[in-house]
Length: 445
Image 1 (cartoon, rainbow, N blue to C red):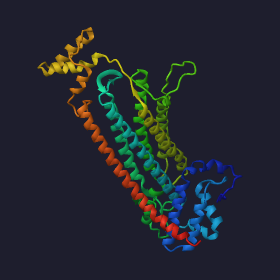
Image 2 (cartoon, rainbow, N blue to C red):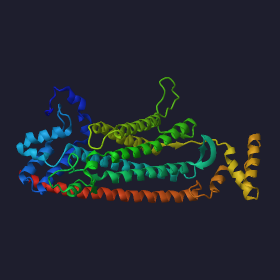
Image 3 (cartoon, helix red, strand yellow):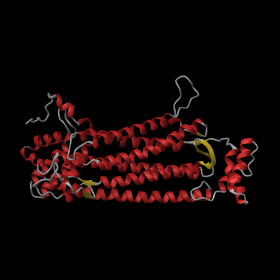
Image 4 (cartoon, rainbow, N blue to C red):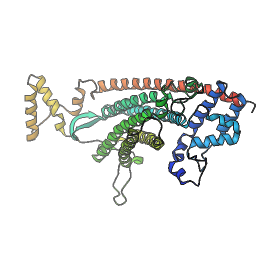
């Protein structure tokens, strides 16, 4: 049987199988998970207070992963045993790297999703503030990228906010799934040690445990689903980025100076570089999700080391989401709407509807107006502002309707904030129990 010694730097297989590069992302979460396990061993009277206190102190002193280790779990355990002595070896009882890493991944993902959800709320607030400002500013709408009907820029911004509301809800639902604890499930079928998994979950701020030990140690579907939700978010952001590229090229908007760059040769250029990068990052994210799916789909049930190669794509995805939201927020804080000359043919639908409401069947009115447009003889009986003000449909750009819709959107945001704050408070209160026991264990050492 091959036994790989800790820190066997001369073995080339170590570098091939090592996850140290991306384990740096979860050092704090791995340490917190280990503390919960040590405290559970103490509460179950498996180790005494002095031993538990010494191990906790060693965990706190661990700051980085030295070279030569396969992963953070190996490095941390070796560090504890070297600092505490033989008693440090108690940490191997009733736990495995499998349930340990699964827990740390969920703790890190919870932190990242909370950050993304916070950022999304701030972006949505900026969009609604700007929608209020631009509620009367006439702007073209498009279908098939052809001028369709007049709307307002405020109406367009309210559309983006509603798209992001859907993305927020999807991410929050994933947050609830992520917030379940695998800890205490061992390598695959648990342990002969009586571990109180619910108490461990409570100390780490989780809502509940993942019950089945096979699922707890070897499932990554909640993490993959979170990346899927981030892909959905970036699909929305990428479409908006494409709009900004087009609108700025059409001279409908002016993007902030910090969002554009000039050409190395053509000094007049204002290239929408941040939006172009955002589109590219959305494409990359789809690739990350495909990589995760491809790795996961063929794995047999139970832990396989393939799973550690998936971890980097979680961190890439979270980083891409946060940076994209931040850039888009900055863009809309500084965007300017330019005075555009709109084609009066965009009022053709209003004209056809007006004729129909006077008693002419709509299809007849449609072809009558269409004929005038094609001949170049179409003259609308209303202007763009009158067209917008005449809209009766809920969700339309009619300023009276739009202002009410913006108010409803603000109410949605406040409700989202409340749920998010409740979630954070719940997590914080639970973890404070762990901190209190941690402090008690280290007193007098």
